[in-house]
Length: 401
Ligand SMILES: *[C@@H]1O[C@H](CO)[C@@H](O)[C@H](O)[C@H]1NC(C)=O
Ligand SMILES: *[C@@H]1O[C@H](CO)[C@@H](O)[C@H](O)[C@H]1NC(C)=O
Ligand SMILES: *[C@@H]1O[C@H](CO)[C@@H](O)[C@H](O)[C@H]1NC(C)=O
Ligand SMILES: *[C@@H]1O[C@H](CO)[C@@H](O)[C@H](O)[C@H]1NC(C)=O
Image 1 (cartoon, protein in one colour):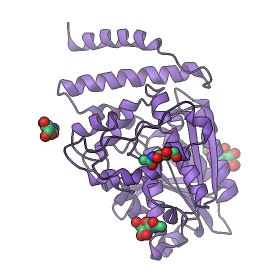
Image 2 (cartoon, protein in one colour; image 1 turned 45 degrees about the vertical axis):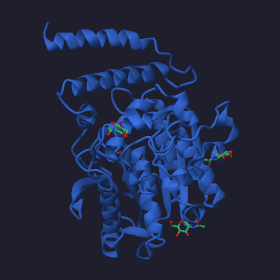
Image 3 (cartoon, protein in one colour; image 1 turned 180 degrees about the horizontal axis):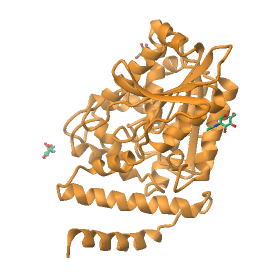
């Protein structure tokens, strides 16, 4: 039997098998979610197979699956859309065509993809950014940063900072007719981590003080310290983003070490002497009662990994790892969390900590949605919960930017 036939047969069996994995009943459009979940599980198994046979690296398949959704920039009656470079970093720019008497707001949108996949070119991101520019009458800048595993931390963050700093120059803002007092940095998932870090770093940079009015995070990933929070437990097997897949992909950004994702999966990756940072991510302190349910707090186990990775203690990977006086400096914040998401508690904890520090936060919790919802809003899925999230996000920007 040829490899293809074999793979096809295997896929069919898996398809049948995974169809029986229960999908929570309170999800919107459960059959679509089930379909997304099945395809993701098949992709995960195929990627594992390819990795084990040496055909390609695990993340390569996901990279390809994301890349086939890329589209070229196209302008429409309202927007000029172009791909250019800002300081050698590729960005897609959305520029409203209509003449404006006043300067426009701007949004810098950082895409997700677990630091190892994705691009502003992907149809769903193009859709979000186009709609943002059009509805807000705003300039939208979407950077493509370097990805893991070719480029490890802090490459992605550095690229985002280069783009933000380039854009925040007076002459550049002037060129695009942007009002420096009305700029938001936004992003989803791992892009939310980058939003968190970029904003924290800019607030500490005297040269750029007050330039960012707001940050918006859609189901952000905000820490790599504790992967056994209630949301990680409850949604361990998905839907869509399983704990294993999330950890396997995003760990590529941190180090080239096969032991690391394994240790993170066991929640035994933190180095000796790092117990001090637990207080920043301790869900038993920061999670609203409603989400704690009957879960029992268990500290991550220290010192089990031979190699010690300082990156695991770095707030530029885990924006939750800063103290309250650093949080206090942060601007107006918008956070969307989804219930059916391993990263739910990252967002919930950040909301609590920001509010404790006195930062104005708008928080929306979407009870019936999954992680990644906005990545399924275009053909063939047209996932309604994703469209709702985009609508909420843009409405918030309309009122607050
Ligand atoms: C352009 O803007 C108008 C008015 O807001 C809107 O009705 C129309 O759908 C927009 N066109 C596109 C292609 O988005
Ligand atoms: C976590 O929080 C709980 C409850 O507030 C507390 O009892 C525990 O000591 C904390 N653990 C760490 C490591 O911060
Ligand atoms: C880690 O250290 C232990 C004990 O020193 C050793 O047995 C094990 O082989 C090491 N693992 C790796 C991956 O180096
Ligand atoms: C908070 O962290 C910053 C940077 O690490 C440090 O300079 C500052 O002293 C800390 N503040 C408190 C109150 O711990």
